[in-house]
Amino acid sequence: MKVLIVGGGGREHALAWKLLQDDPRIELVAAPGNPGIAALGRCEPVSATDVPALCALAQREQADLVVVGPEAPLELGLVDALRALGMPAFGPTRAAAAIETSKRFAKELMLAAGVPTAMARTFTDAAAAKAEVRRLGAPVVVKASGIAAGKGVIVAMTLEEAEAAVDAMLVDNAFGAAGAEVLVEEFMTGEELSIFGLTDGTHVLPMIAAQDHKRIGEGDTGPNTGGMGAYAPVSIAPQALMDETVARVFTPTLRAMRDAGCPFTGLLYAGLMLTPRGIQVVEFNCRFGDPETQAILPLLGSSLLAPMLAIARGESLAGAAPLQWKPRAAITTVLAAAGYPGTVRNGDVISVPPTPRDVLVFHAGTKRDAEGMLRTAGGRVLAVTALAATLAEAREASASFAAQVQFDGKQYRRDVGWRELARRARAS
Ligand code: AMP
Ligand code: GLY
Image (tube, rainbow, N blue to C red; front, side, top):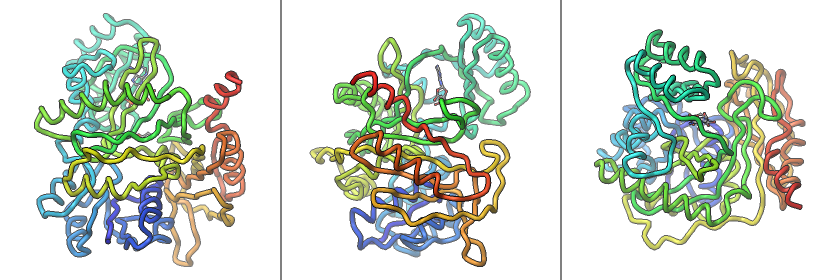
């Protein structure tokens, strides 16, 4: 069987690793891949956003399965184009990807379907948006509707900050087309959870819940990043909460997508907040999360390949066995380059010692130079996942290996999982 993975980050390395665990005979091709993935298969120098070239590659390779990692090719219609060629592709169509790429679409769908989420209204006119900001009062949240490289959400603690965000998006065009429509949303409080569901458009196989750390600094301080670490399992997501998430979030959302004429197949990522009013959806993503995937997949005891193939082939998941989880804990520590999340310095030499048992190193922003030396080539460079019987042991192993990886300017957090560890300490 030949599998083509589109993308070249830590998430795609983890997907490649897991699919090969499921079936070591897989012939793996990645576009563009990275040096970590190159140890598992063949990397082709095709950009993850070049839809015609990706289609040509998939056809040339006669891939039995194409797995699309990032949202950008999904938004560009890669899955539509592959399906038109009769190729089995895992991921939503462009229309279904709108659940991530248009916050307006997602919000209207959720509110109409009764999915629990914060109230919000959409504006294109700055004066009207500011009137709504004043009506709601601070704190209040202003969001660019489109994809704004993770910077399009302003959680404003004051009216001035919220009005400035409205002006930046609607008057100064700071986010371009992504900010031409803004949502003004009520402020919520609570812990956030990431829950992924594999879906054929109707049925869902939920994965265990994870939490990630978005801030660069220990104690969750400093600027936002793409994610500095993740961990699973999470004790605030017992089975009852998972069942509730399927019943109140996944099932009605998938039904509403079918009713809207754009059934969602692939991996639906529900970003939830556990508020005093109960679970609320903060956002949906139309793909696996990064770095949660690097923590979750090593805990998956059953096959990922089987449900992915079924979904890509358009088969039903009715009657599919639930996913099986190893009774272990995983902590993923992201190692970021100098300057991240601001302007990143590339080209620092990386040295990775041999990995101990139960430690996995996933590559993200790495590159081999002409001499074969591994160098930094992006903001998030590596993700170090450690598995152990307890979260505390996993954290120790992950942080200690992260300390041994060397490159100039390395930044990482030693406190990944601190909320969960504090919770467990309180409970005992
Ligand atoms: P999003 O891109 O929609 O996930 O938003 C990014 C982050 O902003 C979320 O992970 C939350 O931490 C925060 N956020 C988004 N919406 C709200 C809200 N209504 N109230 C409080 N925080 C929010
Ligand atoms: N970890 C957040 C994301 O993948 O969007």
